[in-house]
Image 1 (cartoon, rainbow, N blue to C red):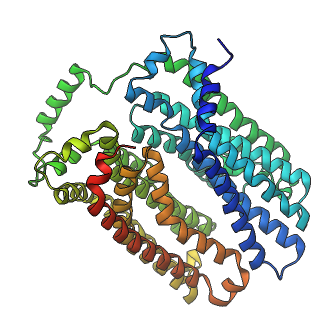
Image 2: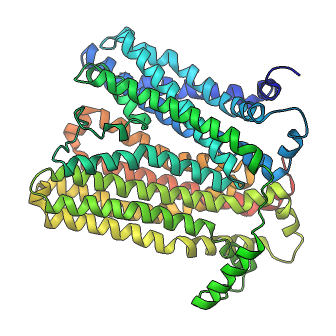
Image 3: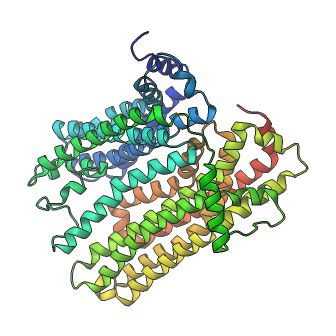
Length: 538
């Protein structure tokens, strides 16, 4: 047997797929477009400023692509084999667990690796412009490589311990959230408690190890200004080696767990199911969920998404509330705390939108893969009732969560108005900007919900992989507003003339228009082509 035969097979399959070449060309094209736009915006600045701005803008785009692609590409690699029942056949051969894992890692990570290699030449162009050194560029490349390996390894481990695609992707996103958001937030709270909290990242904090597993921290410490300041060199290499160590640990853990969990089925143990039934009856929690639509009842009986959403809010809400209360009660350092509360609230909004896309696309994606959607069309249930039941279940599942998010926005706006002196938001322009952010966030939820649901259902039917449908849905709905706001922010002349309220207004207006147009188009597609797509499985 050849060395790592599954790797050779996966690479051979990938080399014949058109998506391998499209992803590489698409990543390079997106980076060239970003480079050109930033260069046009910054044409009147000095060469040093232009070089640093180009590297920052393109580097942030590359880092986001690296982290997201790694999770989405590997999160369903092993779990898909579990559902199909094919991974057990591999263990009947002389293959070892590491053969299977490295094969899946090679096949899943090829698109991300090619995309990252395609953008490296564009990232090197700021060296020619000025203001960027070769060593700074080399450190950034190492940071991108470590972040890619880190993201891919977490996704692979989540795929090994999960069976369903949605559960694997949720576990991978949760792990990345813990390392990239929760641990830095914990570091900030500890720093504030010890009177060392600032907007920056002080190097003399004994709890800086909480920041090392964060890929964003490694990326920031790679720049010359951070690397050469204080213990920046130690912080960069410590963070880099921490990412690599966690990645290797994830691969080792996946290798050890795979032989023990590959045969797990989706069946619940009889004893546990009976105990769960007794507890529900004793608590009076069992009730009949039915509105006359069988699709609605079927969707509502699956409570996994609701449990995951509740767990997310249980983690984020106390953290957000702590930052918000401290921001209005402390005598100094209020602005950093309020910024932390703001970004925690935004993380909650983004997480709920991801859950909406996951749940809206899951039912049709899984049923089309298994052929159940084709059998459903044989029943007397019309297509209109199928879509109506799916939408009604989604509204029931996320109605309370959306209300909680609106309450969070209202509470933050209340703090901005009534504690304006502590937060230094008593200026009219600042007050207007925050008002547009918080009330615009409420309206964005109203516009994004139908856009996400209709587009996710349509993409779930069209895509081969569930996680592809999710990431395409999120990018199509949210990316235009993000990109336009980002370009306006880095344009100093436009910010200085119109102010932050203009940027916020453009951001939400763009998002509302995109969501409205997308929902109308996706609804028309799924209502007119539902039967054609359902019976034509790939």
